[in-house]
Length: 636
Image 1 (cartoon, rainbow, N blue to C red):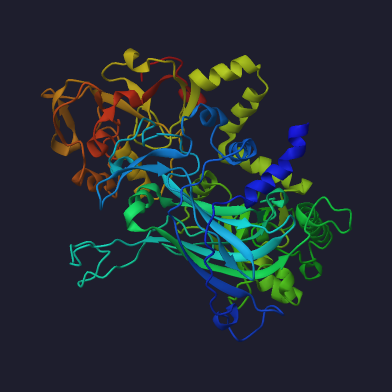
Image 2: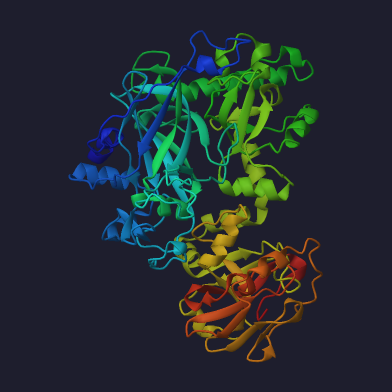
């Protein structure tokens, strides 16, 4: 109980504790000079501030029990790993490309404080290998080497608010870039694109995989939120202490550390700021997080009642207000089938959580809330930049429904005002549950069944048995896309594996590179499935006619790999042109060579090269779905 009473104070200390630093302040022209002059959107024009902050300071180690407790409380990595770690402040090593020195990669880099709007302080938090990477983890989950090529996955950068006192909060939109330069000691053009012909230093901006809000960009992350005290943050209504994205490449960020002078630069636009916003006050109406939740909930509920009453008279429907950062949930409302279908055509579906990343009025001027607009017509014409919450959902919606552009989707308020609610309204529960089961009914049904099983059985299943859903055509016709396999993951799986067996494995570094370069994502638990074609000691691994493979002078063991028709675009040909596995004299003692059963589409060892046998973690025992293809025992 005493610990629970201390937690709000601990969180507040976390929000304020920083390294000793110099404040960097740079105020630029107000937003008015950048806005369309056709219409004023707010009584007070927001101010915009630019910043350029070096990213060199490793997060300091805690010096007291409370600081240690605060760090553990706010670290998203598994607590068991943090406690067992010798040094949770580092996550591997990197080689400085300019000096050749081997340096540790810090888990978190904390910038100096910088000031906007007369005393409002911010910092940039950079996680060079992402927020969830573990100590010493290399690409494949083993100890990393000294090569930067062995670094994959995303890097994360966050903007962090440092309130002066409890209850301070500020409404902002921000843009963020990471860039670096180098020092050419000789002053000559060495072919590095960081220099011009005279040897002058150039700045290079790191690319990103997605841009957050609008406008879309290949280098600039953008978003808007209310930044507040940590214990007043509720991200579902757009309130946070720190916010950012894992959209940068970990390898590029790690390459830019050290002598390349990595910096964060961008803009912060301030719309409003307040003090005394505490949920623990007695005054009404409530303030802080509770006030924001109740306001969003009540606004959505009033709009829902109006919609239900005036389904056939849209002109009388109450227009609810929206704020950037909040999460909205579309609903499938009887009588509004045309409106629901129009929304689906923009890839916004009932039951999916969408966050408002940025917002603009009908003229394209940035705004923070539709409350700043004068009447219902102006509010209905405001534009919302929406993204589904969670990258996995984004990938599902993108691929399954034919989406060809990146998020966010830009839509007018009038398309969603009758159909959306919040996470806190009871009428969002059923659409969210239905949507989840529609996307992956088998997985959610199984999860529900496991949730009600005895705990020992659940722990056993989690560690030694799992399900694997075939995601592609690479193993056809043996395994079809959508097949569900029951997989065993008992220790020593490789010792029970022979030539021609189908195995599940953690992707090696080269395969991860291919996945990331295609715009897709991988989690720390992502697995791939192929057939073992070559074992340690095999020699003369060759790519033969028609993209087949021979080992030891003979065709590989396995089914006929020509049974599946060629993919029309012949994309595999492009991968094979520079494939890493076209010619091996001999496999090492710890190497295997794996192939998919469909050579026309399978990205396998022909493309990414050898697979370390330690990456093999499982074997399929049975196919349990679909019902007409059930197979209760192997081999496959």
